[in-house]
Length: 295
Image (tube, rainbow, N blue to C red):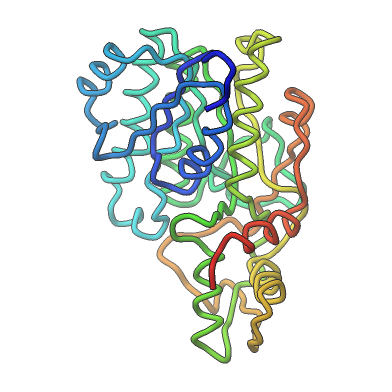
């Protein structure tokens, strides 16, 4: 904890996930009081439990990292996805409204269908094509309508040195196989969760000199640049010095239960200008993250 006086109390839900874990790491260097919770500490789908938690703890900011992110499983487990991505968000937003808490809710590029080849701004109408995307969009709408003090941040292709993610899977498969096929016709931007965590805290810090109520609404955040999943995998193998025969596959050659956006690059102009945030290039952040991943 910093030697500075504690300024605010920040609740982080989904604390055991990638983003929550990154926030936990950098919290030690910030002058805030953090409360980190996951399902075993606070059941967000239980409205009474959420209200009781907020009554006991004075929460100034709530960063909601909790989400049902198993994209393919969501296609058959619709109610489970809705419980976390919709119902839990409503419970949090209602508790935030009652207690005057500022909500920062994390969403996804999967709210877009991918029928474009220009980076999506916040003004583009969403068009989800999966249960995951639909439930995350519904969560966005509920958060914004229920609590006026809400910032929604959409992000994409999140990875970290924590948890399960594409980067770790590629490293494992690269060591196990001589050949691997990866989709080349889905385009987006890899995002290092550590960069997103820093951006979120920068937004909270900005409340010290500006009224965040004037900045409520929707924002996009990913690292800079554009890549296919093939490009992402190639960069991982190159940076890790893994020799493998990497083949470029079309989406039709790698069918999945849930459809993925063919293109989900997001325009980050709004968040950069609003909060004076510098965003690193995706490959530079990948290199930093790989240095933290053993093996």
